Image (cartoon, rainbow over all chains, first blue to last red; front, side, top):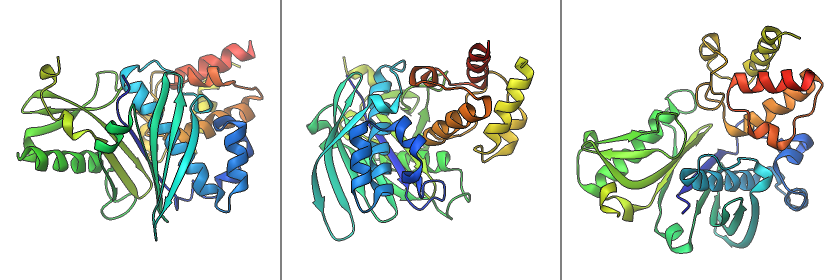
Length: 217
Length: 82
């Protein structure tokens, strides 16, 4: 059963700008169909990072249940199905075909960032609580990992109506797999996904799973 | 090329992608490139491409997928050079 995956990319980060001209990167990461799509749009960098974020989100979702699953980006094929354009933000729906089956996908594209969410089923995706936040003080001013963990814990504390100090983020001893959350020392069932890039950080979790892990049977 | 020479070249390559150079000063063969050196996944793709150029070899997808630590990269390059 796949978990939750999210990934954010800062479109204005100098290391990300112009990547659509890097043929070797494109060939290593994208399928031939994805490369054709990137080459055909007016903003190839934006589409490139949207597809990349989709692959990363899908990998995080499947690797939370199976940390040994391959991470080869080309083996996570992204299919974008629909576009819902608003004034400043575009939402793309679709799916990612992974080595462990299909995941549903939503990619949000703004002028500054792209953010992808992946989950095992449509209803799970719609239930997700997700946020994209600008790092306070900008890139380099804060530890982005600590910043995104703090933002996640504040959101969970608000939902559980408890002090943030009652919560902490833990990882497996080997540092692999999805992070988990402890509430007053007890593991919650919720799987969370954390991401940061450049000036932005993002998190996602399923609010329906903010219950003790030992209550999930 | 010796393991030490390959390791040094790999660390030199990583220098271009690791923002906190102090993390590289204490790097060992067991150092995890993504988790310990805080390199993101997209930059890991760039590092693999750079390794291909520096060592004059090609690294296929499955080989790249096995690179998690500095030691994994060194061992792969050593095996391909043998």
